[in-house]
Length: 212
Image (cartoon, rainbow, N blue to C red):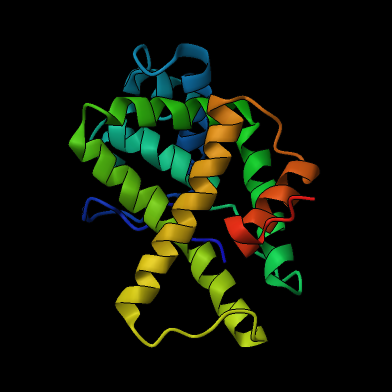
C-alpha cells in the first residue's frame, strides 16, 4: 500500500533524463537531517545538496524551492505507513495509531512536520502542498480501513459518494489530529493503554463509553 516516492513522478511536469530513485532518496533523507540540525529558517538548498552529495542544480531540476522539498521529505516518511489486516476494525485502528505515534517519535519526522506546519500558517501555497502531498495521500488508510470493515459487516455501506468522502475526511481529522496533538503538542505518551482507550471512544462514541 505504499505510495511511490513523491519526487519519483516528476511533480513539476519536467521532462528529460529519468529520475534517479537513489538520488531522490538521498536528497530527501539529507533534507530531514538538515532540518533536525539547522531548523527551518537556516536550512538552504545548498545545505541539502552538500549533505546528499549532489549538485544544487540537481535539486532545482526536481524541486522549485525549499518549501516543496521539505514537504516531500516529510511525505516520504508518511508514505511508509501501512494498514495490514488485523482482523477487525478496532485492531486495525489500534495498529495504525501506534505505528503513526512511533513515526512521530523519530526526531526527523517530528521536526520536519512541526516546521512545515508552522511555516504554512503564513504560506497558502505551502498549505496546499501539505494537503495534496501528505493529508490527501494518507486518507488512503482510512479508505482501506473502512472498506475492510464494510466487507466484514462492521460498518454499513454508503451509497452517497459525497457522504462517504465527508466521513473519510472526518475520521482522518479525528485520528490524525488527536495523535499529533497528544504526541507533539501535549508531549504525552501514545502507548497501548492510551491507544486502547482512544479506539474505544472512536468506536463507540461519547455516549457509548463505559463510565463505571
